[in-house]
Length: 119
Image (cartoon, rainbow, N blue to C red; front, side, top):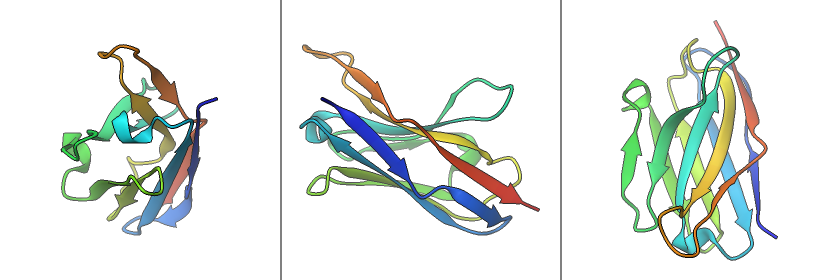
């Protein structure tokens, strides 16, 4: 059974840092593109950052230069280092494992972790 378990969310002051972690089970990690998404109240879920199975990264414009996504295949874990957090960053952050365009394909989500930024 595949599980994605996020951790590392919490309350931080504006300008501060947090590191999110997402560990997967089910032997999917190495072949998955891993992503971090976020959803604020009343808004649609949006992509924050993605790292491909080969290590290529892409970021939303709103987080470029502040957030860094990385992966450790030995630990089946993807990270999101968030620096210089802003008042517009609070949301529930979700981890995603994606292999939709392959056969067999899949797309899995974690349960989310809350990030709160105080001004």
